[in-house]
Image (cartoon, rainbow, N blue to C red; front, top):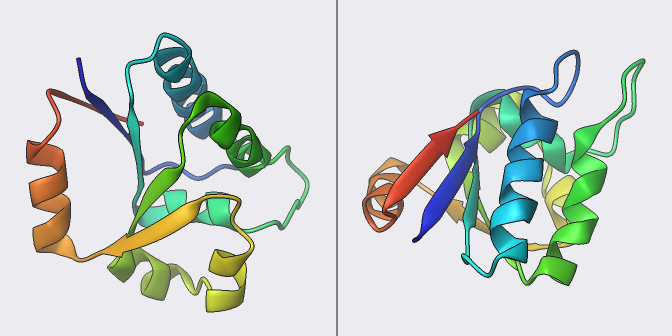
Length: 116
């Protein structure tokens, strides 16, 4: 079973992003080889800004221990949310920037797509 976990929620103020990462880690622990795609405000998981809330992005550092080594990122969301190349470089995973047609192909390549 292949599952793509898509995070479109902000890492602040609610638990959607953390819940998505929990699902991803659970799938990876059972060797399901899940994928992770960040879209919309979900790209803020890549920033290290704490703010007044806990930041779910810190969980990204644990993903390589679960053999999740590839992170797909919506290139248009990076530009729209003002994420810099420096912030991308600080991510513990290899970030593959995708345009809209590539995102469509990525989603089609998975049996299940979970959007948070």
